[in-house]
Image 1 (cartoon, rainbow, N blue to C red):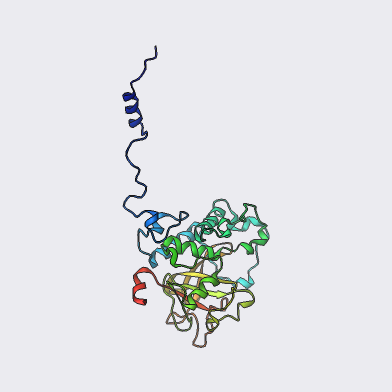
Image 2: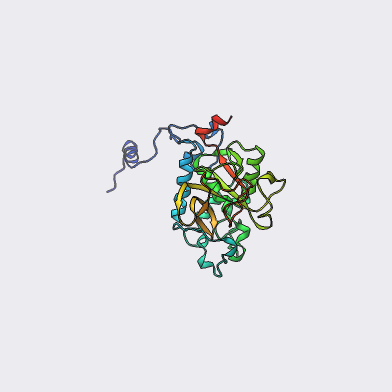
Length: 293
């Protein structure tokens, strides 16, 4: 015989089993609501948009190093002009299981809402179709990677997020960025968490620090500085940078410097024969921003 249960007993069962209660749900304990924030993007974790910790050099460097470890800690010290592209897609880390999705996260989090590039992955276009691996230059993600690092580190809306490095190179050189200052590689030694940049393609040898800002977009590459004051192989005095889409991966590159840590001689000639570095982007992290105002 099935006995009817009292509504009060049923309520007790529901409460004991984690059922609904009449207590309000606290969605953001200890923080501010999205409406109260100066910047909010539901693509980005709350710890970044709400700055649970200050936007700091050590955080940006640690995030870049974490991503490098995820890709297997590759080191790319070769001359890119002498390095052949893989002939089969299986040799491209960006297309491997678990990593093409990670590249997709760089795009999704690094780009602002509404940018079609935000839907790219390491092997898909914005429609979700797999693109030919030989055409991956149209989906180059090195700027998305640095945008991701800055976003997750807590730069919020202060960084000019873009699929193109030249966007933030020009923003830094023109003084339009709140947290970037373009510095001459001949006069400024990069610090941890700064970025160093070079033009690519037909502009590789023509764009120098004196050329900036340009009135146009140009192909470029930047890496974030993760080690300074090094003395070792292959250059002796050197720094280390991490960049995205280097050999279709997140890779570390050693860069030669002089005894004072600068990238170029007084005439502006880069000590690095592989990369004619045109600018250092000094990043003004939270602890330093006030002193630059």
